[in-house]
Length: 308
Image 1 (cartoon, one colour):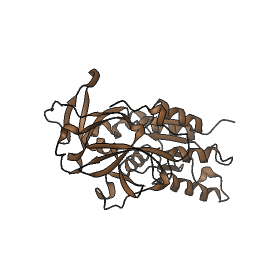
Image 2 (image 1 turned 180 degrees about the horizontal axis):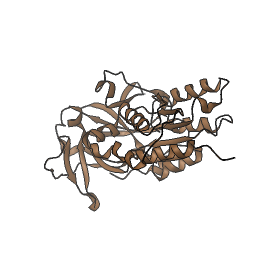
Image 3 (image 1 turned 120 degrees about the vertical axis):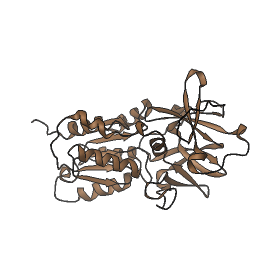
Image 4 (image 1 turned 60 degrees about the vertical axis):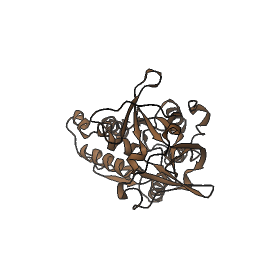
């Protein structure tokens, strides 16, 4: 199959829509943000690796690039396909990492509004820190959007946020500046907040998506206090149910009372195309997960009092 042409499918900035690639495992329907997919191809033979994680199928080498293959059915505890010669590898690139996910079929690409994606009930796919990041409704059926960052973090923990990186920041002083975080992944939001606390930013406000963050900002705006007393900096993911980070950025930067509020896009999707989107929307900084020490540095810079 041909590589996905991202420049043809990326949507206009700030519309609160996304493209989902729909795929199946054991007949059940799942989805992934197309922005994470660089290519889909027929399953190829793989070379098993000794002492690898049990959900790692092995490696293969298309066009002289070694790629690790994740058996998604195995990870989800679902049965393999009856005839894997028709199975598919989805080649992905996020967090500056390339992985192949072994799935059973790819059904196509669907455009959908984030408002039609709901956070799944906590009992679905693993409870509080489950692997489903959203449930999308499309043409009368439900598509489970998987948290691929969490999957990779569990399979390869060294690729996720590392608290040890914070040590290179040196001695820190405590700050009570309110930092608002919009992140739908329970695992990542906990790690971001813990990292900020370890770095001295002890006043954090957690929201699960852009809509919750925007509601908080609007409520703060109605008070008689300066907005910086309620929110000094916004750290937002891009992919989130209800409202994505690009839409949140657009709303903040188009509001004359809020446009000076610093916004940092902290996402696995920061690539050339996404960086251009963020710049068009007025984001103050963009950084790829899991660069946590660089994130803290950006918060330092953007919240530093400006000289008159």
